[in-house]
Length: 321
Ligand SMILES: [Zn+2]
Image (cartoon, rainbow, N blue to C red; front, side, top):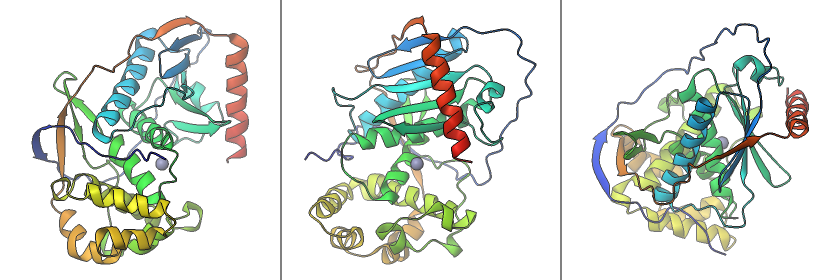
C-alpha cells in the first residue's frame, strides 16, 4: 500500500521565531438574544464538502472557504490528498451558539466532529470564537486527511500532526501561510513530562489520566511531530518514512522508532527535544491555489434530512455525556 506521509515540504519564504504562548483558551460565551425567527437552511456543495447551514450566506461561505483553504495547505506541505473515491466530508453549521448548544453540548464545546458509517461530519456554530472553532475543526479534518492513507498511524503522530496542522494561519492577504506555530493553550510542563516511550509505544487513554497528563501527552505529540516533520533541516523525514515502514512490516512502534531514529523517545528528549523545545520556529509557505475549490454551489436543504441530522446529533451527544 501507498503510505501518504509528509514527503515534500515546499519552498519556504522565510523562517521566523514564534513566541510560545502559554495559557488556557478562554471561551467567549456569547449571550444570544432570543431566537424567534425561523432561519432557512441551505445546502452547499463543492468537490470535497457538503454542508448544511442556517447561518448567513456570508458567514457560511467564510467558514467553508477557510476549511477548503486548510485542505489545500495541508495537501501542499504534507502531500496528503483526498482520493477521488472519497466520500465528501459533511459540515453542519448552526447560526448561533444557542442552537449549537441545544444539540446537548456542554458550555465549553466550541465545535466537534463525528465519524460514522464511513462518513465524517463536522458540527460547529457560526458565532463565537471563530479562530478557536477553526482550530478545532482543522485538527479534526487533519485526522480525516491522515485517515485516507489507510495506514494506522501511532496515536502520537495522529494527534501530533493534527495539532501541528491546526495552527496553519493564512497571512499576506491569503497569499501565504504559516506552518509550525505552537497551538495556543498547550503549555508544556516539561519537568513533569509524560513518559516518551509510553507515548510512542502505547499512546494514552484520556479517561485514565489526569488533565495535566493528557495535556502533556498532546503537547509532546505536537513537539515530536514538529521535530520529525520540520526539525534538523528536514533530515528526519526519511527516518519518519522508515519508522512507518517498519511498523507496517510488523514491528512494534517503539522498536521501529529506535531503529529509525537511532534512539528511543526518552533519549531523544534528553539529547535533542529538550533544546529543540526552547528554540521553536515556524515556516512560511507560498499558498498555491491551483487546486482550490471555493465555488460552493448553494441550494435549498432537504428539511427532513436536516431534521434527521439534528436529531442524530442530539442522540449522539446525549450518549456521550
Ligand atoms: Zn485529535
